[in-house]
Image (tube, rainbow, N blue to C red):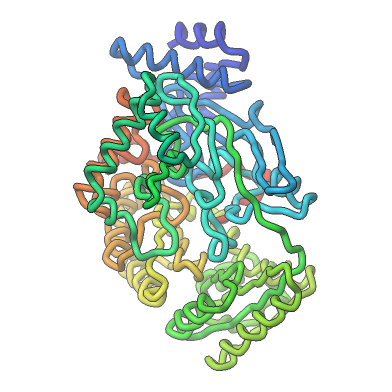
Length: 545
């Protein structure tokens, strides 16, 4: 492998490393897995990415497979930001804002840019990127695109895929392409290209044409979904064609994004926040349904449960002191409105409080920025669960991203409680109530054989339950190595075979993040479990979900 490293260093402007400590650092992300890379590359520009992928393609043509994994800040919880070959790390150099158009709100960036840095810049122009994840302070835009990330604002604004206008992508053979929505005439030109890009367009166009009925199975009855490939969004009814939605959420398995142009929204710094205290899960489900029917959707409908609040009270009793009194309700729901019209915002908040009054739910309404921040501490208290360690027992991100139809919200939470009770575990639930997308992380010790076995039992039982409820195994954190084995169960063998064909069209030698999403089984991931879980590479920030 040293010969490969030497070759890359000779031909790339960016740095190439094989030092043991660097390889160890990049052997983990925020998942429960560990895979040390052979080589760490810090690309300085797109040409570096192109040269590296071209080289691995040439090696693959001769039978030697060295996969490339694109990585941002390593916040991925599904094991998609680790890999055994070349680790391509983007934040070091490819971290710039390239262009901002004040008229259209479009912003063009490199993948390694810190999400919070971009958001701060956008705020100075009275704009923002709504689908930001809870990890925005320490994650990258490239990672958000790879996972089709979403967060607290997505109930109103949608996921990352909604905001990606176009991309520059390095293909598996080193070709650089630009993706955007093409009309029929533009598509015809692409289909006629005598290049790998042309081959991809031709094969993909045929695949979609031959499987129109099957593609309908990709549309689950959930408000968000990051599982699999968004093949159904490539071709629209008007005949237009766009690879962008397919690349977004593909976790670097179809191409490596080197530049992204994203749409933004007008930012309203003045918001109204309501903290509703709910003791009945049926009432919570009804409240969510009624809030979603308002003339303008709340920008956030977040929730934390009593178990989480009691956990925080036990381990950090001052965190919520003066904010939330005991005894805690079954659920605290945070409902926020961010309309740019103050009058509209007041009307919506009034209608929301009428909904709560009708269900006899007590609440607190705040418009003052400091008091709103205090109430948001309730939702952010989930970080206390993720960060707490009792000896070697840690909250593990293994069954934490299911999403079900909104009208099955209560059924979902009840099923989570039943699953945890059955396995002798305490459940603490938080997440996006407006999308019925919940996070829950069991406390286990990866060093104990019994707990390691329990992980796979929980995985099977939890994802079977989510699928039975008509949900998706991943609302916003994607498949990776963790949930990839459940894609076939989610969609069925025919759709899974479509995904496999998509992967083969873009990456015939499987050099792009192999072992992620497609072609990964439970037996593949058992040997790469960590022996202990840590988020030490993220501790300069407070890890959030």
